[in-house]
Image 1 (cartoon, rainbow, N blue to C red):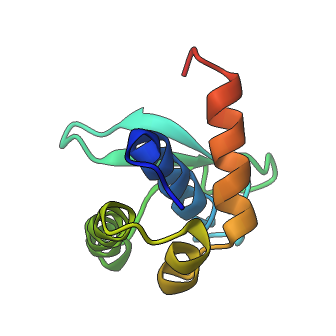
Image 2: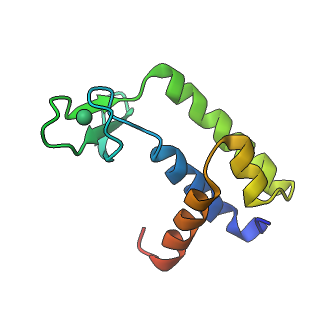
Image 3: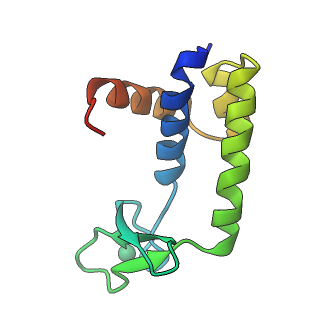
Length: 111
Ligand SMILES: [Zn+2]
Protein backbone atom coordinates (compact mmCIF):
# COMPACT_ATOMS: atom_id res chain seq x y z
CA UNK A 1 0.00 0.00 0.00
CA UNK A 2 1.42 3.35 -1.02
CA UNK A 3 0.59 5.97 1.56
CA UNK A 4 -0.23 9.37 0.13
CA UNK A 5 2.79 10.82 1.99
CA UNK A 6 4.98 8.42 0.08
CA UNK A 7 3.64 9.52 -3.27
CA UNK A 8 6.56 11.81 -3.94
CA UNK A 9 9.04 9.05 -3.14
CA UNK A 10 6.94 6.61 -5.10
CA UNK A 11 7.03 8.77 -8.20
CA UNK A 12 10.76 9.12 -7.83
CA UNK A 13 11.00 5.34 -7.60
CA UNK A 14 8.92 4.92 -10.75
CA UNK A 15 11.16 7.49 -12.40
CA UNK A 16 14.24 5.53 -11.41
CA UNK A 17 12.69 2.24 -12.50
CA UNK A 18 11.96 3.64 -15.93
CA UNK A 19 15.38 5.26 -16.02
CA UNK A 20 16.95 1.85 -15.52
CA UNK A 21 15.13 0.61 -18.62
CA UNK A 22 17.06 3.08 -20.75
CA UNK A 23 19.79 1.54 -22.80
CA UNK A 24 22.37 2.92 -25.16
CA UNK A 25 21.08 2.89 -28.75
CA UNK A 26 24.59 2.11 -29.96
CA UNK A 27 25.85 -0.73 -27.77
CA UNK A 28 22.79 -1.69 -25.73
CA UNK A 29 24.55 -0.94 -22.45
CA UNK A 30 22.15 -0.16 -19.60
CA UNK A 31 24.78 1.66 -17.55
CA UNK A 32 23.50 5.10 -18.43
CA UNK A 33 23.77 8.42 -16.67
CA UNK A 34 21.98 11.70 -17.21
CA UNK A 35 24.14 14.28 -18.96
CA UNK A 36 22.34 17.57 -18.68
CA UNK A 37 19.97 19.06 -21.20
CA UNK A 38 20.13 20.14 -24.79
CA UNK A 39 19.40 23.71 -25.90
CA UNK A 40 15.80 22.57 -26.43
CA UNK A 41 15.61 21.47 -22.77
CA UNK A 42 15.55 17.82 -23.69
CA UNK A 43 17.12 15.37 -21.29
CA UNK A 44 20.42 14.10 -22.58
CA UNK A 45 22.00 10.81 -21.56
CA UNK A 46 25.47 9.44 -21.65
CA UNK A 47 26.59 5.85 -22.12
CA UNK A 48 29.13 4.91 -19.44
CA UNK A 49 30.72 2.17 -21.48
CA UNK A 50 34.07 3.78 -22.32
CA UNK A 51 34.54 1.81 -25.55
CA UNK A 52 31.24 3.07 -26.90
CA UNK A 53 31.36 5.70 -29.63
CA UNK A 54 27.88 6.99 -28.91
CA UNK A 55 28.77 8.89 -25.76
CA UNK A 56 25.70 11.14 -25.75
CA UNK A 57 22.21 10.44 -26.96
CA UNK A 58 18.60 11.47 -26.57
CA UNK A 59 15.70 9.15 -26.06
CA UNK A 60 13.57 8.51 -29.09
CA UNK A 61 10.10 9.97 -29.50
CA UNK A 62 8.26 6.81 -28.54
CA UNK A 63 10.05 6.67 -25.21
CA UNK A 64 9.38 10.32 -24.42
CA UNK A 65 5.72 9.82 -25.23
CA UNK A 66 5.65 6.77 -23.00
CA UNK A 67 6.97 8.46 -19.87
CA UNK A 68 4.21 11.00 -19.01
CA UNK A 69 1.49 8.40 -19.52
CA UNK A 70 3.18 5.93 -17.23
CA UNK A 71 3.74 8.56 -14.55
CA UNK A 72 0.12 9.65 -14.65
CA UNK A 73 -0.98 6.05 -14.36
CA UNK A 74 1.32 5.58 -11.37
CA UNK A 75 -0.14 8.63 -9.64
CA UNK A 76 -3.69 7.47 -10.31
CA UNK A 77 -2.94 4.04 -8.92
CA UNK A 78 -1.20 5.39 -5.83
CA UNK A 79 -4.07 7.78 -5.11
CA UNK A 80 -6.58 4.98 -5.56
CA UNK A 81 -4.68 2.94 -3.02
CA UNK A 82 -3.16 0.39 -5.32
CA UNK A 83 -0.21 -1.41 -3.82
CA UNK A 84 3.31 -1.31 -5.14
CA UNK A 85 2.84 -4.87 -6.38
CA UNK A 86 -0.21 -3.98 -8.50
CA UNK A 87 1.37 -0.80 -9.77
CA UNK A 88 4.57 -2.59 -10.71
CA UNK A 89 2.61 -5.28 -12.53
CA UNK A 90 0.49 -2.82 -14.52
CA UNK A 91 3.43 -0.57 -15.37
CA UNK A 92 5.61 -3.57 -16.17
CA UNK A 93 8.24 -2.52 -13.65
CA UNK A 94 9.90 -4.85 -11.18
CA UNK A 95 8.52 -4.44 -7.65
CA UNK A 96 12.01 -4.99 -6.29
CA UNK A 97 13.24 -2.12 -8.43
CA UNK A 98 10.60 0.22 -7.03
CA UNK A 99 11.19 -0.86 -3.43
CA UNK A 100 14.97 -0.53 -3.68
CA UNK A 101 14.62 2.91 -5.22
CA UNK A 102 12.30 3.91 -2.39
CA UNK A 103 14.80 2.69 0.19
CA UNK A 104 17.68 4.48 -1.48
CA UNK A 105 15.69 7.69 -1.62
CA UNK A 106 14.78 7.54 2.06
CA UNK A 107 18.37 6.93 3.11
CA UNK A 108 19.86 9.90 1.28
CA UNK A 109 18.18 13.20 2.00
CA UNK A 110 20.47 15.16 -0.27
CA UNK A 111 19.00 14.13 -3.60
ZN1 LIG B 1 26.90 2.73 -25.59
